[in-house]
Amino acid sequence: MKALFALLVLPLRAPMLLVLLVVSGYLGLHWADVAPQLLAQASNPLQQQLAGPWFWPLQSLQALAVVVFCAMPDVLLRELSELMAASKALTLVVTLLIVITGGLYLLHLAVLSEVLVLASAVLLARLDLIRLRIMPAPWLASLGLSAWVLLGILVGHQLQHSLGGYLA
Image (cartoon, rainbow, N blue to C red; front, top):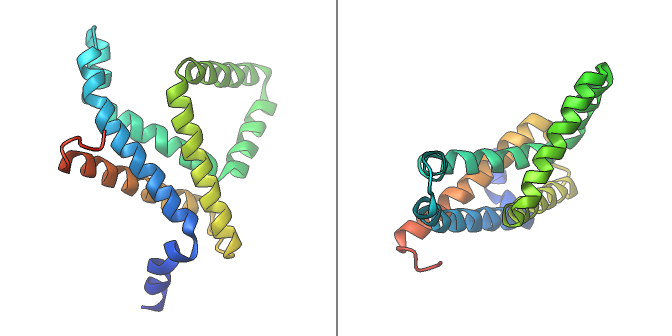
């Protein structure tokens, strides 16, 4: 019972968790507003597919990738450097993948800004948890912060639809 109470009070003790919830809620509001516009502007079947049923899973996957990368950067970077040290071919493939992905994000600066804001909020929430000396295992921190971000996105999405788009 005491552990449950401590978990419920945690957002009040670590206010950056509330900031993370607000940021992810804003992303949910924004994506709920943008999705119908993208579907209306889609000209070919692939764009219609990506703007239609695949829009929310892809946006959620992007948010989860940002949270996982920010929740356990030491583990991921260590594994990535070991992978790159194994072979020159793997080094080339990983470098090309990073450059191409970075270039795609730079082509769409609005998406890059969303990713940077979410990453900053996740890192601030981790820093706030470390300030409280709450340091769970990296996979547990990643799981908890991912659930928190998805909750915020869901709240923002539901708020946008319940108000009928008045917040846009």
